[in-house]
Structures are given as structure tokens and as C-alpha cells.
Image (cartoon, rainbow, N blue to C red; front, side, top):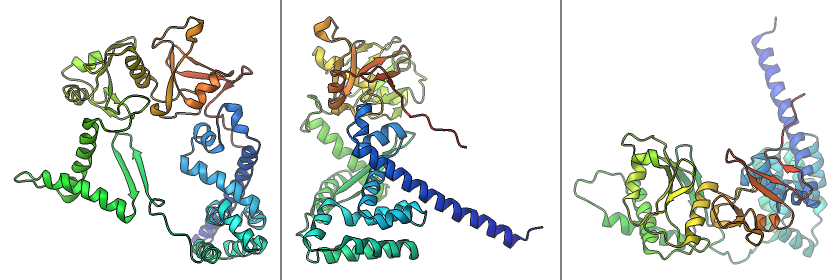
Length: 390
């Protein structure tokens, strides 16, 4: 009978073995991704790059897809580290740290200074295999500092970032990083709204006040009409809701779908519809638009709005580019007798709009799903079926 300590040891051995196996698989995957990138394989499915293919066909996040492509490139430049990764001794995250040292700009700088990259590769590999993750981070950072000790005059805008994540209930959260000057501008704008909205008895926390100020700032800019146009139209708030739900006093809690994918209740949709500055689109039982609201007059804008709200993104398999990157495509070309109608329209980004005019084909099924075919007649299937586990 096994003791608890020996049983625990067995489990830990299994964990270590599985981590090593995952490292080996990550290495194999990175190499295959790099091979696909070098051969321009994504073009077969109408996509421009491996990150976009990985995101659309393998359901990877944009960040994960980009990291995987970078790791594949890194293994080519650092063969000793690649060999350790193949053996399961180095993780994909460690390779991602080393990737910072072999960007095109830093490779060029190393060559100009006569740096022997093989030596750097050996040092990185030794630290990655023998040390902790943090040790490799420090070694890579030290190398980068030596490579460019003075460094260029920093561009304060290079470090700016904003990441937004929409949750299942439609709520939005995010994180951002701004340089000192950019941060000052944002704080000044928000503080103006915070100080202008201080009613008597207000017990909101500072965080709540800033959140309200953030939304109010967006409301004011949208209402002013000064934002850049998206595909020829001003940015606006839109909701898709069935007519029955709109007029039903009870209403379903998730009856309306907003332009960026959030769902709201029928009561909330009615509240928005009362605002003359917010566009309104009502679809009937057959999915055809019945009412486009007071703001809509031109047929071109009417049709585009309807197509955007029905398709929600580029319909080409594996793409999903947002509406403001897209054109409205005639499924049956206008010169071939095709009508300019909702039924004969599809939302396609610029790249895939060109693809369907050069052999690719998209088609909407009776159940509303879109399918895509290559010029050779084979269908692009997303996601790619995974092989069953052995």
C-alpha cells in the first residue's frame, strides 16, 4: 500500500512530465506555425496572416496568436533555445521572453555591433534551462540594455494602450496605460464632468463618479457629431429588437442586441428609442427591417444599417472583422441583375470583398448561417475539426 508521501510524489512527477510534454508540443506547434507563415498558407483560406488564421480558425485570442507566431520566428534565430524547447526543457513563455532580443531592429543592431548571436543564444538557453523564469527576464533585459545603452529618445505615445473586454452580460471592463501627458488630458476631461455633476446628497464613490463621467464624455462626443465617420456614417448607438418584444410591456430581459454585441432588455430598448439622437431599427418576423427611425432617409444608409445589424461582422469564414472595416457586397453582382437589397447583401471586409470578386464565394443559408468556398470549390470550415485524442 502506497504512503501519502509516495502518492504525492507520483502526482508531482506526473505534473512535471505533463509540463515537459506541453513544452514539446508548444515547440512543435510554433515550428509548424512558422512553416505555415513562410509558405503563406493562410492565403489558401483567404486570410492575410497566421495571427488572423489562428484567431479565426483555432479560436485563439489575438494576443495568443501573435505570441505563437513570434515564438516560431524566435526559434529560427535561436537554435540552441529551440532545441531545449523541443526537448521540453524550456516553456513557450520563456521563448516569448527571448523573442524580445531577436526583433528585426535588434537583430540589425546586434549585427552592426558585431554581436555573436550564437553566444547570446547559449547564454539565454543556459539560464532558461537552469534558472527561474525571472532570471531569464533579467538576463534578456540586461542584454537589451547593453545592446542600446543610451537608447533612443523615447516616444511617449509608444507605451499607450487600451484593452477592452466584453463579458457575457454585455458589460464592459478594461485596462489602460497612458504616458504622463496623455494621462493628464484624460484626467482633465473626466474631472470636468465629475465636478459638473455633483448634485446635493450625492453618495457615489469616486470610482462611480469617474465611471459616470466616462460615459457622459462619450455621450457628449457622439451627440456633437464631431467623431470620424465609420464607412461614411457617423458613429451611433443601435439596437436590434423584434417588434413583438418592443411593444410587449413585459418584454424579455435579453430581447435587444446592441451594435457591439451586448444584449439588453426590451424596457431598456424602449428607453433608448425615446432618444431622438439614437438610431432605431425594428425587424419584423421575417428578419426584414420594418422601421429605420427618424434619422434614416437615404436608401444606401438604410440598407447598410440593416446589413450591419444582421451580419454584425465580416461573414467570410474565419474573419469576423468589425462592421466599420466592411463593405456591403452584392451576392449576385448588380451588373448581373442582382438587386440592391438586404437579401442580396453580405458584409465583407475590404480584403474579403476583393477575394469574393476573385474566385471565393459566400452564401447565406436559410437558417442564417454563412458558408464560404474557395475558388477550387472546397468549403472553408471553421473551426478546423480537431483530431480525437489517442
